[in-house]
Length: 266
Length: 365
Picture 1 (cartoon, rainbow over the protein chains, first blue to last red):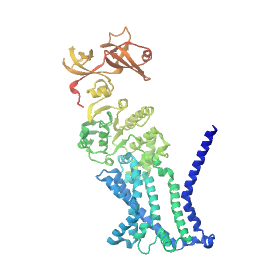
Picture 2: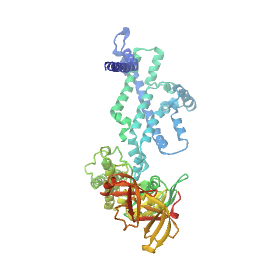
Picture 3: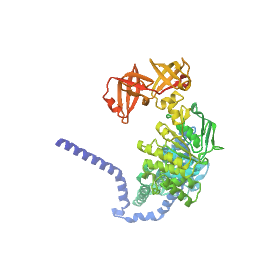
Picture 4: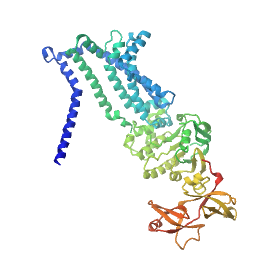
């Protein structure tokens, strides 16, 4: 009896230790970054590191938001019809097409970057405006937008669409009134994933950004490369991290875990 | 309200034939049920009537209008699915109003119709709820209301009760029938459940392997099955292969003797056989009576056997009797089933209604 109690206690202690170990492992780098961002000269405490955020870095953040917004819009405009075609219509080579569309997920960012420079820059000269960058981001994040929508559509029983059609709805009405709201969980998940990637991506931006456009992550990258890791740069990094964090929190606040899981459908 | 007319409807999926040369004429306001096992083509037929599937060949008419290749929104039908398929993001009221709203009707008109339909299916006051807040039976009633709101020409039902529990099925099937009678809609109903089909239909179409086996009323199908499939599907479980040995009298008064598996069985009222002809013999378990020792003379057939097994199923008891090496099943109801539980050994069975079907009518499988 006593021994069993002891072994149970030991198990409890070990599992607690494991959880704390994981937490420390994941949180330490961010905690270190946070504390570094408040470090002034001679190790003093300095809030003024964050003044840059509201100075020239605000411009970089604005570019990031603009490019993220345009990319998400373009992603959605392509992914909505593409996912519907992929799930609802039989056609030869469907699997191959889906694999090709999700290819950017498996390809290293540098490879995509070189490929984009080759096509967008040398061949089509698209990188003189931000549309080249937006298109590059769209290529990179498209699978993240497409896959959750495809999954949501696959889970959506065809009976809803058939019921709508039998009630007299045209294909268009069926899509906007029934299908689109019901695949909402997939769409919002795709938007969240893509936003976080686009907002934080520096590598692809490095390759195809037009002159005069520096996004927030690219600015951080450039600063670290040229001036080394300064506390002021850390302050910018922390700000970016907060924005991503707020995006995730807002997603769960607005849509809830229920929405994310898709139990909304039942 | 419409007459529905199907002319040699055929549907192929690659090499498989789902529906073959299907002809059916459903009268205005009639309730017709397509009955058959799963995979017999009944749902495919219904979906072709709805326009959800296009037939490979043949024609479908609603009254004088050919609708064979019209898409569903252009047909003005009401389709009730196996699942209620209520739009989960819309309230009960918006679900019912959906059909009118997509047709661009005025808001006030839609609201009036919604209230009318809610009252019709006995769910007044439930308009603001979401479908998930209703029980399965209520959901299926809303889907009926949703379909009726658009005033469709034809009501189509694809096993609408199969997802519900038994008690609910029993009450809801009569609600469906009541609504159909009240609204005078032509209805085509698909089910694999014989008792459901018998309870609500004006006519029943028994289907098997993509073909029509028999069309008729409940009594036609129950008393005069035209094919072995129909006899067996409607529950004639005791079957024998036999040969007509002799026939007494002619016409209605004919008495046919059949030698089958070592028995001689007598059937009355069949004059369409010749001596020596091979026939299939069917005896329904519910038509077999367990006799007391003194009884017997009033039955055409009396056989003696040994009880193999008695399965007590509640309202009925299933008796398996070994008669000369053949097992015969008798369904016993009433008080008799309880006294039989104690009974062992020999038993005498009497029965009159023996169904004979010529072997030549057998459809090769």
